[in-house]
Length: 344
Image 1 (tube, rainbow, N blue to C red):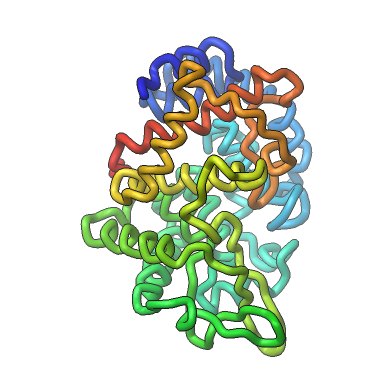
Image 2 (cartoon, rainbow, N blue to C red):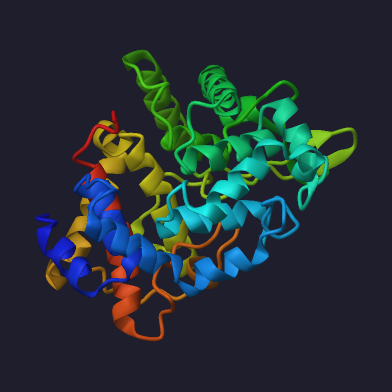
């Protein structure tokens, strides 16, 4: 699909966040350009951005929780998605607070976060590293250490040839077998927003692992068994890599957009034919409407920003045009990344 009509529409009708991100991420415009600074000022006045700003504590921490809705995690994620740069005072202070978080990483997730980290399922430290990466802070040791661990977790699943090797049934629940580690959405996000690890060997590793998970799809809901406790890992969006997009529910569409954007950022939509087929199906869906995504999707997953949910950058979807702008932008990210290698 020729994406230029979609871009032209969004640059004319979309909110400042979408316009800013198109110029920055697709056109690679410098953030120092006057028009970019003007857009950044408009974004800082966005109601959702100002709401997050109101959460900020004197030491820079956002809200009280680390994980969940109205949390440090959801606040940083929203600011980054809106296009706020890391030198913005609100985001900068939040990132500084995140560096010395200490026991606050347990807020909203408890000791489960450390358990998931220790067992290789992506917990509090993986979440923290992803947040730094999303804000463009890739070089710090916390991120580099978690990148190494994420690659190791992905590498470990290549020896697991079947679902029988991955989990067993205990009291009607699927639980991971002892010693098994498994990638979470945070491992995927962390690698999607970082670049220092990208060399031919590591990229083959990730391609092979996603193809392996794709062959195993749909993946059931599997818990971690730890000291007589069932723990749910962060498996959001990680259950089915081969859906038929023509039969997705609205909530599944949100997860599809989220997952496919990450795959695009990793360069996988070009390398894996099954993913490329999904991108081509998206392309075909948008062609009759001149490159706009006009399917009427409505679900709280799109609108409510949390650790996992939230993709809406427009202020609301009361006007159909705003919904079209948001969903066209997400589609555009996926379509444009299909023609890039991800090697930035």
